Length: 341
Image 1 (cartoon, rainbow, N blue to C red):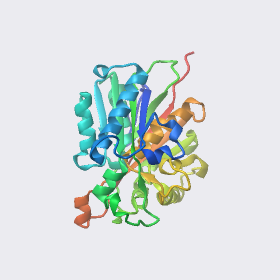
Image 2: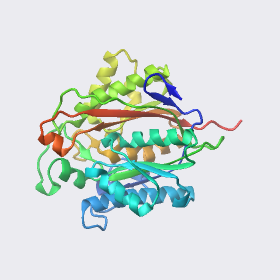
Image 3: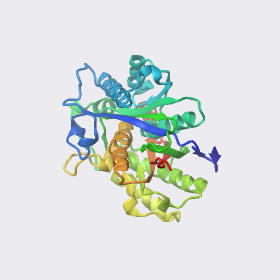
């Protein structure tokens, strides 16, 4: 059901029945290593290119999800997924391996919630029974495409962020009343916001206005107060983007508690890891949400959360043409399923 101008309400409360999360060596040394299902010791992962290694990450996350759900891939109607690499080739090639009917998505780092919103919509309206959705990124592949190959050892400013090597996948199914699993209850689809910033080493600052715009739209459409949620989680704004977004929300009159406002890119790594302003990448919110956050929900840490994944929709070509950076954010509300009465 459409509510307001840009939000959906999922009355049938689609369930996140199982998840799979894979990561690289840097993530293995981070804060949330215990929330990954698979961690690799090197960035190559047995492949001869970083792009092929990124494909492996998604394939592993899909297989792990299916194994946890005790399902075969033939039982899955659709796969919604994407990444940052040109023509989302790692994801498309993983879809070639999995042979699941496939929707390729590009929302940059907002892809995780774009996919979850679409998968929930399809399942909510009986367009499918079982849908997989997720996102992936690889540090070395992304750096090579958007900045400089990591072999160059180039220095970065404090505003830069560290692209996550990882993939996070969720299985979205029809609701089973009484089963203690997270469910999606609503989603707010963002607008493209461009404030004229053009520095590819300050993605958080560029994405902050889009994050604030979607968060405000969510509370306006849903007629809710921020206190409705135990946690409002952004995807990969990092320190600069998160602080900027919080300031924008306060100036807009939204009464949000700083302690309930967190960011995946700040949760993932330890303070002594050289990630500058924090983590980023399509795999950032995907790994933290489908791993750590849902594990915390199942332990009773959170009852209701709003996840807002942000994306910078630039490309190497647009940067070369001296374009500014258009950004977007998508939000999905998640809560624990109601107990059977």
